Image (cartoon, rainbow, N blue to C red; front, side, top):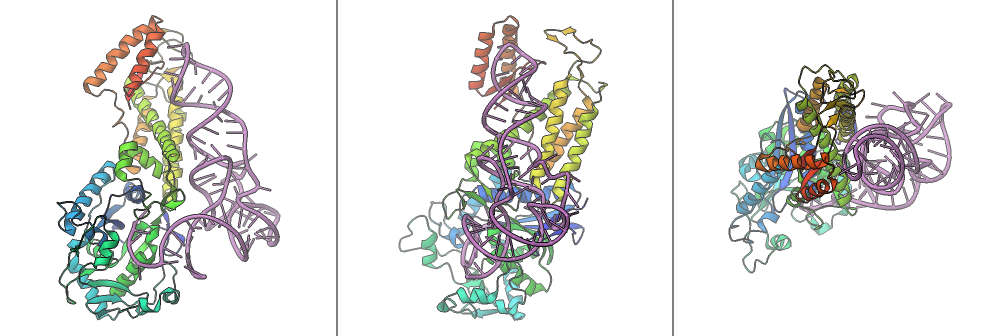
Length: 514
RNA sequence: GCCAAGGUGGCAGAGUCCGGCCUAACGCAGCGGCCUGCAGAGCCGCCCAUCGUCGGUUCAAAUCCGACCCUUGGCUCCA
């Protein structure tokens, strides 16, 4: 089945056709000037699942995700800590943090994480090309893109140059030819008032200026938009397949990227533009500047990666989503349901061997249906919520199978006793191969594609602690057999207080660490 | 003002591209039953929707067309 995506360039659903052997994906990454928040992580996670799906679908994916490490906001924080002596020091600090969070969220590694500061020569080359082609001009050491020189200006955002011109104040134009022209290169360092605007501490009489580089137009810094064009072309190609970014970047950032890139190469910059919806709290977007954010660090600490991912995967990438404690609680329920079903399937599988003769056709059909429905959903513009529903239907089939079967082979006659347990009527042994396939489905679709980590936080037998819990449960089982329920319940409560969740079942107690 | 996205049950959120299988998915919350010594989990079932408003097209509309109302995002810090 073919993959179709909603292309924000054309505002239409289109069949996805890659241009070459490799699918070239560029993700508009983070400006590393502050702690990233859950809004950023939503983009990362959706971009992650999209590339994981392409990979799973058999494409070779080259995934580039940049770090913007040259920015006024970063420069403004120089000196805030003793070790932050330069703009690069601040950037380095945040980049290493972000990489740690990305790992924490179980994001698959991108192929390359390029940084602006390492691509100044490419940026200068691109600016020179634009000047030579008559699309850009120099003024007092700065270089601007002339929006009137590019016929398609506005294709992505549907903005008209005239409208943009009309809203600009006449004196706002300054040294630019048109108010809508944007900087490719800015002369000199960061101005003191820009530093003051973004600084979180008082710089006194000696504000930092940020780093500057030598260029044909004198010392200066690259403009905001040119970096993505330069890095996309350097690490991917003049024409890439998919460009992913947040909805708030459509204008001006992505519009300007298209203008400068296509003006320079004469080629289409990106064939498919995917824009992710923004995360909101209390009906406004979560953003650093509004101060209403929940950091990735805090969220990882409080909820863990699987709950966070489940939360994001309960809406489509293009929709906006509202963050709330209630929504996170729901995500937690959803995730635990999946996880419990997976754990139970693994336990059941361990309790029978591959010679078991049960074949539960319902379970096996459910596995096939899950693959089919999941694939159809993901191919339908990465409809992760529908795909999650497919996984949910698998848990239902697995749980039903587990309810109706036991670990004892059907050589036992109904009503027979095995140890303290009685074989319920009409029960047969687990379907080993059916369960195996269900487990593999959880691992491939839930694990490989959705990046959920089954098993890692739930393994019961983790060293000494696990052994001790086993021991306690043996004692408790003896109590239960003797009818000493009061003590058994006390022990279960005490274990729960310690974060060990005990559940009794036909096959004896199971437990897991919270 | 200009541009874009959206308005579906208590909450959340698919379905809208390609009209009929939508008497509206998967969930969360709530209720009942089964199971269990109990609890939890699980299973089965139930409750809650004139699909923003008005009009049009059609044998048939949540889905197409028009108008209007409301919300959110962008309009050179933004994922």
